[in-house]
Amino acid sequence: MEIKLTQFSHGGGCGCKIAPAVLTELLADTPLRSMPKELIVGTETADDAAVYKLNDEQAIVATTDFFTPIVDDPYDFGRIAATNAISDIYAMGGRPIMALAVVGMPLDKLPLEVIRRILAGGESVCAAAGIPIAGGHSIDVLEPIYGLVALGLVDPKRVKRNSGAQAGDVIILGKPLGVGILSAALKKGLLTPAGYGTMIRHTTKLNTPGSRLAELDGVHALTDVTGFGLAGHLLEICRGSRLGATLRFADLPLIAEAVAFVQEGISTGASTRNWNGYGADVALPAGAPDWQQKLLTDPQTSGGLLVACTPEAAPAVLAELHGDGFAEARAIGRLEAGAPRLRVT
Image 1: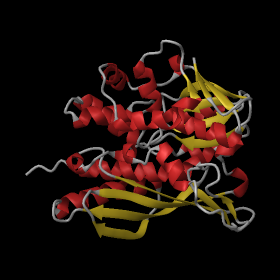
Image 2 (image 1 turned 90 degrees about the vertical axis):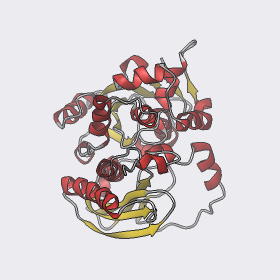
Image 3 (image 1 turned 180 degrees about the vertical axis):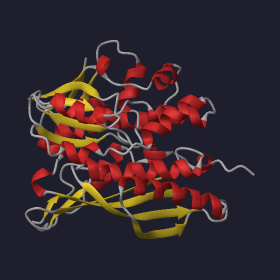
């Protein structure tokens, strides 16, 4: 019997993240406790990972990410989940050193061979990143869940936070948008083999340039675009840095097949939840079609790096991304003085 992993998922990949508005409400009453001075990045500005300073030249970067299946193929699911988790290390400017597996599987529904393939997919990505899976934890649950605790190292002086952007910075996006839309089309049985190949190519490509970009003069902030969509994660930079931003929609790198699907009305429920959570802080052009909003809020599983840098550093940033195979990377807008809002032109 063929096993379709997505049949067990109420929402796949980063599309199953808790909606921004709900997450804000959940965390609103979290008590603020005294933090050790060595914890140089915590929960203050919605950064991708925690960073704990060990000495003047080394800090530990720690993060975890896991989710339900976004694809049916178990090996691909493992690869996507692992790539997505390790990305948070690169997004802080760090270098991964090891991972721990987070595994939850419905043992009464999934053959052991399927679970082995999921784990093998994750292990293959860790091998590509040059790190071991050094342990982990597993439980028997109702939905398949897989991901990693990822650990890395970074020079404390090179940590890139959401709060580091400056007025006048250029905004650069490393991967094209539309992965969530492709996943919605897949669940409906509409995604072509070519479209599936495009989806896998982007979601399994490690954001390795992040650690090198952190060393470039003029790079002020880094994050990666995941479940809250481009608009949501850019707003996190805006809020952390107390800046506004302008995006040029025509300059956004987009997956062509995703654009065709969204223009036919195919999108994820997470896209709507994202807009409900932060849409009040996004100004779209008058008469902008609904599909443009859907792309801006589309949850990206294992999405691209989002870089804020000086105009002078932008060519070097783009050269680094293009040279590592991120051919669609491009400048998409600018940060500016003002309220933490996003304007789309």
